[in-house]
Amino acid sequence: MTAAAALTRHRTRRGFAAAGLDGWTLGALLVAGCVAIPIGAVLILATGTGSGIWGHLIDTVLARYVGTTLGLMAGVGAGTLIIGVGTAWLVTNFRFPGRGMFEWSLLLPLAIPSYVIAFVFTDFLEFAGPVQGLLRELGGWTSPRDYWFPEIRSLGGAVVVMSLVLYPYVYLLSRAAFLEQSVGMMEVSRSLGRGPWRSFLTVAVPLARPSIAVGVSLVLMETLNDFGTVDFFAVQTLTLGIFDVWFNLNSVAGAAQIAGVILLFVMVLLAAERFSRRRQRYHGQGGALRRAVPRRLTGFAALLSTLACALPLALGFLLPVGLLSADVVANLELVGGRAFLTSAGNSLLLAALAALVAVLIGLQLAYGVRLSGNRALRSLTRFASLGYAIPGAVLAVGVMIPFGLFDNWIDAQSSRLFGISTGLILSGTGAALVFAYVVRFLALSQGAVESGLERVTPNIDGAARTLGCRPAGVLWRVHVPLLRGSMLTAAILVFVDTMKELPMTVIMRPFNFETLATQVHQFAASEQFAEASPAALAIVLAGILPVIILSRAMRNTVHVDTRAEART
Image (cartoon, rainbow, N blue to C red):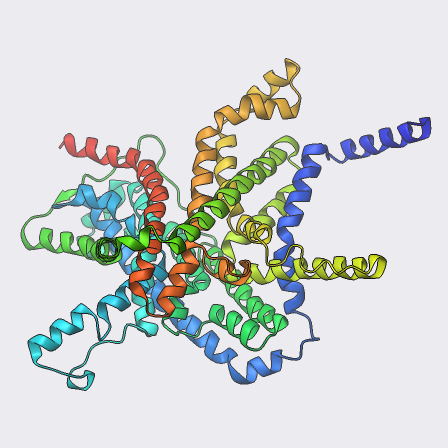
């Protein structure tokens, strides 16, 4: 190395150091920038004017897509609000038969993707299913004209199915908020002449509003992300519109423009959630919090409370799992079939790779922020974490656009220089699919790792550095052993969500490449419900893992209630 080159390198390092940009920070900036590319790609293409299809969409289908999406969001939001808040209030404030089991088991529907419960209920409730078959036998009817039965494949059916699967988001956050409320507030309300239900509506719910709003926002974002249910029920939402415009009209720009509308929905949701809490302050009383001792219910009130908690659990988990298990037992030969084993192997491989990459990137970003505290890095990291709030179909569009441009550029350069066509290098490959999964679920891994790092005092970093450890050594020898639990939790969450992810996989999977999710979708779309059952049950069993993690996280609050009850 020449003296001039050495001097230039030294000045560059000094410039980076002065700006607070060391190697870890630069690496975190690079990773965050790459992850943020799909979001920016959707915004750029959606705001372009060269496609000429936006006017056609406005004149034909956009109003229907928007109206149906709003109707679905309103129905699912109301359904999850009633079920989630109602069951959380019951198990927190009352004692009735089964309450101890319901505290954790009401989370179990989270393990079932909505598209799985959609095809299970369709098979169970359709004209040829056992329910209508029994009705015809009892009533002596022979055709659908002889009696009325609600149509499961409808907007109303989609609302019911998705509400049964998504209410645990509201239940979990509402219960945590109710547990943090002091009994003194409710006693003041009762002393002013308000009964228990009026106190619940005018005191408990307003105090829990921030948590409830976050839970409903998560539900609405999951509703926007859904593809399998709306496709199976033929409910024409904006997400389904992306597939229609892309594959039927062969317009990537039009799909990006519809994706831009969905992004607008997401931003409105986030803004509305923040606006609902403007100028609101919710403070605890400080010191030891005196929680309300759950009141024992008897007679008809106890029976109604048990039924109110048992019904969503039975319809959202027990009945679908029971029907799936019965189908699998009746068709055991399908479990060992080549199609199932191949799809299971593909799902496990993709999920494992996505979990590994997401955890490593999350660790890189969280540690880079911890080292530098750079404001630009924090902002870019938050922007890169928006992937979890954006529907999978939208991110698929955002990934395919820059990957396609890169492939076309490489192919053009190779043809010009060497006369060889390279074809598609990244688009339509497993690597692109894993990248999309990482962008979608990076917030899960980064959040888990970042929360783990926050529990590690900075004094440990300082002590390790005084003993001669460089930042990489501090991370590997100090933080990684301390973060094993957080990293494992992050890996499990990303792994399971990748197993369930459908819209991105349908759009981006390689040709003739099936996963468990796409196999369920393919068989259910062709009315082959028995063939779809093994893959669906495998996804459900994998989904129970994060539910167990959430149940263990709730155990401390449950023990608080138990000790309070023991003292009474």
